Image 1 (cartoon, each protein chain N blue to C red):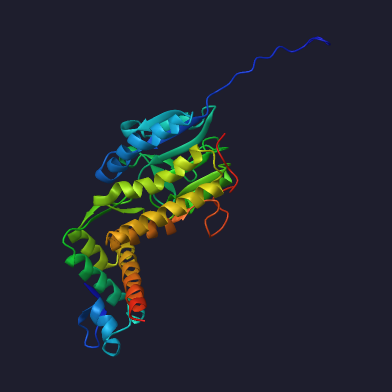
Image 2: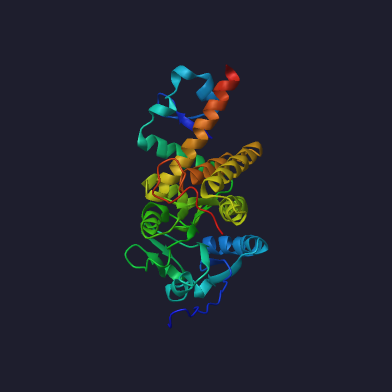
Length: 224
Length: 98
């Protein structure tokens, strides 16, 4: 460029995108998928975020991985079967697996999966690769089918609180209060098993400010 | 619903546990096998029971009892849930008596 010439620039804006990756191929994930589609995404959208979804047969790595790398994606969430190392989609398609994803997929993002076990290895691996905060469960997420929406509501509080602009630490505090309140509600109804199951799930929730350490990211992380 | 066993190995209810302290095995002293058996019996006695995980899907009462008795990974989770219920019930009953 010639000396003294001003470089011409154009400012582009991109929407802040929430990417939902949801399985629904068997009854447990189908139940959570229905709840999320009915309540979670409409609520997040109402807060001004753009929603992109890979659901059902589209909940596969070939579709989800490119979407996760799009400019503007700030939050990745979903329901799917999991293991310590892998978050899976349609018929166990391994979407994110330790050692088998690109760092650009979690980099700079907050991730929350309603999934069993992924918080043990996949979550910390995401954080080592640039994920700013990971919320998930380090063992099975258990629910009673008769009261499944209460369990999904408690997990949804993570998405809800992030969409309200709270930090990861503040999100955790809100989630803790809701789990405790719903467990108390169950006990007041004489539903001891349901209360105990909810408390078990909460104890399995790992995130930046959960009691056992900082492997899950930055407690100050928040959505733009 | 049983919460422990008596000294002869028979299941005992919460009321008997609280009232007959000397003839009961403290829940905290039960072996791993005994805690599993209490959990299995409690689940068997529930009129309806269906649980699910995002890992293994929907689990019937019959399967849950089998998982508990075999102490599989899922079974251990279900034993932990029953343990939480029992310890809560014992704590609450003890508070009411004191």
